[in-house]
Length: 166
Image (cartoon, rainbow, N blue to C red):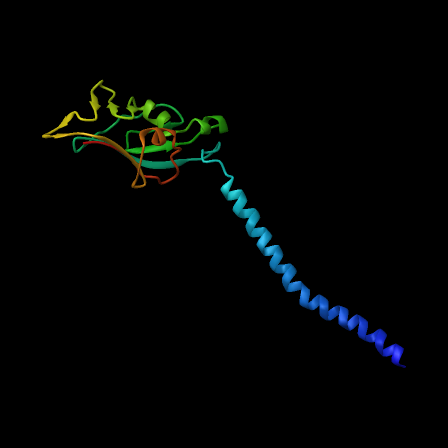
């Protein structure tokens, strides 16, 4: 009789062990799923993919005066509305959709210490802006950066882009 009870206990004990194990297995699956999603988000390229349609307001100011720009061509352009429009048709066009590409499209040239406007006017660090020496500064989303970093930046949807000489 004792042998029979032992055989009945074995399946019950195995079932209890499985009951204790499944929450851990479920937890491990959740953690693995979160890790996979996080990796996918982090490894997403910073450039817009084909079919993206992003908008980023921009301003260019010289000596306290905001400038207006007419519509420009390309997959990174403006409609003359103070907004950078990014909508590449291919991933390769997306890889080229930097702020450098945009500013070329509107005829603006930026160097580390110089701003050149489409009409040829050139503003160098130290040139007068009223009674003070001016300085070229650039920002994305209120974060100041170097001109080199700025020109390599891919404008994202709803970024705020600002160039100021003053």
